Length: 478
Image 1 (tube, rainbow, N blue to C red):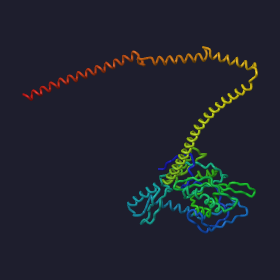
Image 2: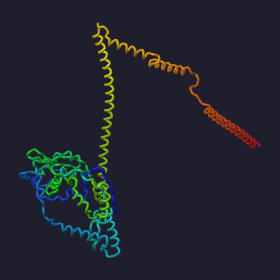
Image 3: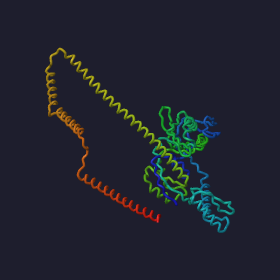
Image 4: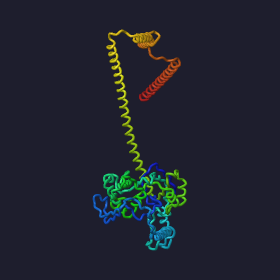
């Protein structure tokens, strides 16, 4: 049955690569008729990264290279929209026929086929047959309306603005490969953008993703003739990458599988996203997910259909936990190094303090010696005489019997007396009160009584054994 799964990550787990309901990267953005990056015509494709290969493409830069002209709309009707809607209705009708009234054998076996098709529809996987001879069949995916493994979790909205110009590219390559060929990737992206010298591609971050994929966040800076620079807005850069020619080059040359603009949605975009759920998701479940949103300002509900989405979330969660664990280990190692350095610094401070006191004493001795040498041959001055009197008075006060020195001598004598008394004692150095002595005496008496009773039992048993032995010997002799 459908359930509501509350998932509130405290961090971004990378771009959402779900194939169910793609988080819109630019709601309300109008497709452009052209960009002034340059028109790149690719006449050949290469597999892999294509590093070091030559691509037969030309870039025609306009007189004023910029990312402008995004106001021009492409007012072309989608000719395939109505056929796609008709195809969806045909698929839905075929799925309903497969689970309700298949007509293969025209007997009771069709009911068994219908139950089997229903189970496949509930699990969201398998192929259902519903026509005569098995010619008519339809595939059941997790997005069918009858799939029971559906839930809604919550994802944190991007905190970046459109002016930050951040766009995330997902590569079907490992992080080590991306970092190894980072400069070549940047150069290839710059060529795809038209190779304009006024544009520079900068890498913001590189993060690993599950299934040996890598997320690279980039932004493009544009420098005008006056020397001022600005970041190209994320929506404009994303719209350019989403064009068929640029997207094909990114896919073929760099193995890019997903492109997402990292920017916070506007209120209109968020409203358009929340108004209508995806096909196959219960509207009541979607409405309840919106009501249960714990933080509507920062979190948005995201449908999760099928075990593939659940596995993807779990892998992202495990990877992020591992990243946090490595980060915590780094912090722990840093703290240990800081504590070790702190102990060393404290030891150095104590050593320097000791040296400072030694230097103070040495300086004081030098000053005294210098003053004595300077005062040689002069009579004692009145100030020196007063100072001498004060010092003698302090010395007499300290040496008086009732003051500090007398008290110290008295304490020292008491300590010596205690030591002599403790050494002269020959008896036990412990003391027991009367109650403790009575308890010990009573316990020992009980132990003695028990031993006497045990001895009496042994003696009685010995006498009995002797009598038995004598009776046994008499019976043998008789």
